[in-house]
Amino acid sequence: MTACLAAGGCVTCGDEAIAMRVVEVDRTRGLALCAAPAGERSSVEIALVEPVTAGELLLVHAGTALARASGGDPL
Image (cartoon, rainbow, N blue to C red; front, side, top):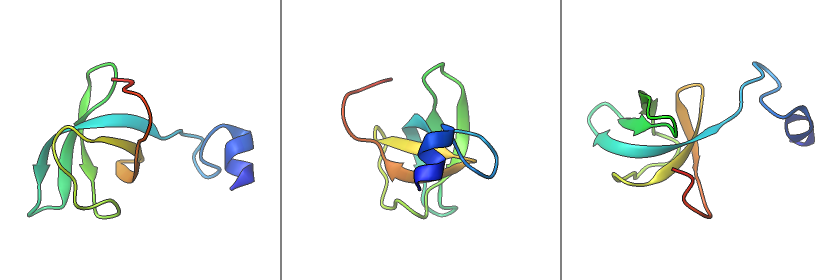
């Protein structure tokens, strides 16, 4: 885990997790429509963090929600 933090992103692909706000949840498919800070939207797999509700802030990497974001409201 230290290597990930020191490198500033994922050791495998170099990407960083970004905070995204849940707009809508599709429980049947296990997906959520989420919005990034710049406004772009994408479908996100939510199996690791279920249950999820609209309005929650998630940390998303490679189209998968990894955790709930805590702290202030960056969006």
